[in-house]
Length: 425
Ligand code: ARG
Image (cartoon, rainbow, N blue to C red; front, side, top):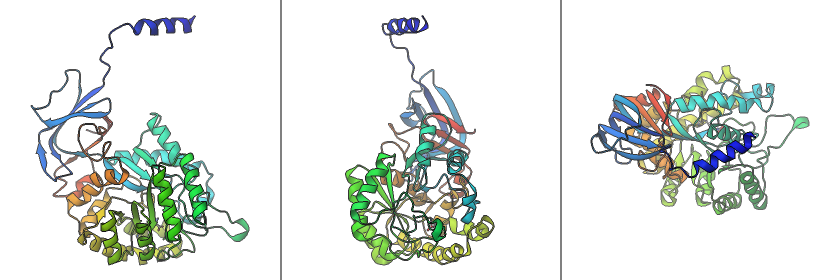
């Protein structure tokens, strides 16, 4: 009976003129930063219709529909929602080293829920989650996109692909309890199969571990761990399938092999040399130096369970990385905003802006790394990274001028995602 009524109603509704169901939001502010040019526009109006920007311009030049909801932000500066190209939402800095063994597998996905919300409230409306277990990032993305929980748009890599015993394998167990990460693949053909498998199970981007790392056991950050042939296979196969590739790479040789292999973004890039910077420029490879987290790890790591082996590596890598970041900026390479959140607390992502400025960027360059550049590196310029018609209605508003003081981004007054207010005013 009920089913019949519903069917009847649907049939009747089909004959009625379509009602205006569009959800419209009009956002006004004192200023808007055009992140592509660095120009500040006075009295902006941004209209968001059904989650996407439908109009943008100066007050008086943009028609605001009568039924629009309004978000008026006098005194504030609007920017596009921020993008962090390197996060681990299911990692907690306070549960480092062997502490992870106390928790069951699904725990880490659950932990991703508050981390996703903290990240979004910090103004990061899009993140690339590059490396996790149990497909936790796919689960979080489904929960966020389905409206079950709040969080940023997630581009998920699922498991990091790497060599046996490499940075992205499971290296913490004694031999009698040894296990192999599901992301491990040795040799080009195994790499090809692994890329296909990860994509099949939900990966939208591929993460490979080209060198050793800081937080793994028995690996040397300076040493290359995937051959050029393996890296090339990873890049070619992923590109054929329509995915971009991020390479974890600290050592100079691993960085250059990854760039030559056609990988899209180099994460960490700590020991990059002059030739590496030149190659990256030539190939248009994006570099993502995670220059904030060193301070956090050195101050809090021991208390958080980070092993001395790893703290020692951090002391070595952190200083070199910052100096090489400065050289890379001076050398004119292209940079993205990659923080490795999860190494430090989620929600503190924007603290990296000040460090990027301290080591040679202008505030505008640092902001571009987290907006236009990140969007280009994702291949998502039509969705995110700028305040322009057709993009998602993802916005941040801050008090004051972010070009005069980037630390204003650490405390966004307002965050809007898809036209929905997620923070303030
Ligand atoms: N996930 C990275 C690794 O373990 C973090 C490196 C952090 N340190 C740094 N100075 N960027 O290698």
